[in-house]
Length: 267
Image 1 (tube, helix red, strand yellow):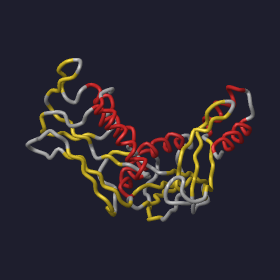
Image 2: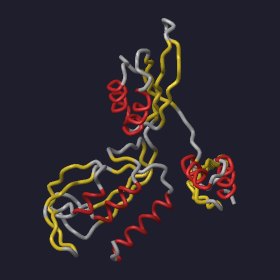
Image 3: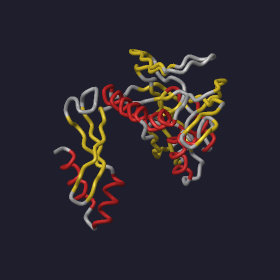
Image 4: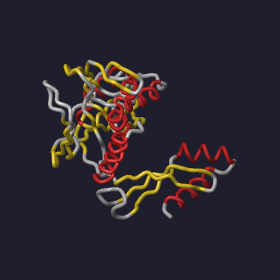
């Protein structure tokens, strides 16, 4: 991807993402087309190998178009910034943008569209489980997060017959609700769930690389404003795995790495 047009695409997209400071980016399913494309290595079927490698975990849909729609550069940008692939999650659209390509297709317009707006409402899903092997919860949490949960909590409770049990609570966007309910009922012994809308307020988050004298550590910062860097800095949280790695490699107490990372992040 050393051609001038690829560099312009990547840098232009990066400038746009930085300017708008999106909290989440959702990409619609990528169209898989037919035909061939000429590359520096010869004639290849579309999607070319680089695109297929990049979109292995993305949602796709068939397209009747003969020709290249998803380029390697486009696939690289989208798969890097996408928080999820799927249908539009917005409950209100505030701004719309279009980018028009040079090629002309008979069946579809050669247009990339960007919608900006307010995200889907968040719901809490709960289920009380009193007869499951406790070993399942490690796997269950991983599966729920993989399917799209924003957060998962498992707390001990006592049920009506005084039996010890566990309550599983999932926070998710409304669009992910049914998929997460299916996952929860499939992976546990629960017979039902309940859900309800919730309201939440989140700090504007920014991730920085703190350069300590022992090594780099990722740090999350939380601001009171609407966007990262705006308002009061309220939270500074070093990444645990990075701190653990540096502490073990250097033989230094973990809490010292935490202290140095926080100091380096807010300098």
